[in-house]
Image (cartoon, rainbow, N blue to C red; front, side, top):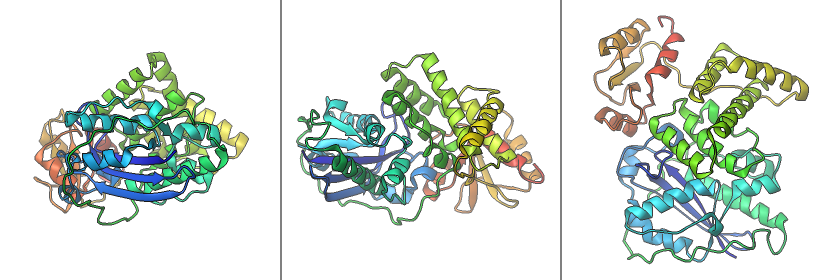
Length: 407
């Protein structure tokens, strides 16, 4: 059976509300595992781009790209008569369903019509984590630019080929059939738009940690934790992301107790990976405390680190350093937007005391935008998105100030 391996970059995590696709890549794979063709384009989401520091797509690039309505017909044709494949298929499938629904097309696509390489890795790569990067590393597949759809789709396609090579004939998933109801939409002329630069997107320290987290014994909970991985990349869980996590938990029939237990295990796994190099700085502890707070696990870090220290001593884990967080330097320009509790002049005074300069508007020289609501669609946030300027929550900004001499 032929396959269509898909990867999406999105503005956020919740397709059922306002998050959209910003990049799509499809790789055709023969039933033998041979890669037949590849296709990719950026998508204009017709809204702000969300976490640009994760997907690395600029507003200038997206503005020139086709909308999903332009590519919907071709995407359907590329997926037709092929088994749909993705790494965390439920996540990608929900965005496809949502985008077609916006065009008035209701699809009945289910997991029975596709394969999830994250789930298959639990069978063929039991020692790997759930992340695509770690699965590829264990399988000997090179993935150099994670969070770029073309790279991730090709890596997932190569991972599928690896599973095909060791799965035998017929494959263990022979019951999976292609989805038969992709719409026949009128052809629309458009030109695919690729990223201007295929440069490396620097990953956040947490991204590097979660790629090495072990998978769980339950494939459904891995799907929830994969969404949690994405939500925690900026150490702030917005209301939108929280809603997305609730929706995923509900769809998987996870109880509150189930989710809390997953969060405890998640924090423990992070602490263990962080301790694996034998060096733990105050900044690293602060990062773990921030994650614990976001997970509703106040006061749990000390115990998690004690357990991690014991575990690392037993297994002598491999080195992993917490690095790559956003840093501010004296003279950097910061801009504020939204109601942040304290009056604006209080926040500006704090920034000035720490040696920062305060800007009234966002320009290319702005180092950071501090937003009361990181989901805001204000003019400042749109400019920040256009210029690739980090947008941080006031809580994260306060932590950064403490690292400066005047903070």
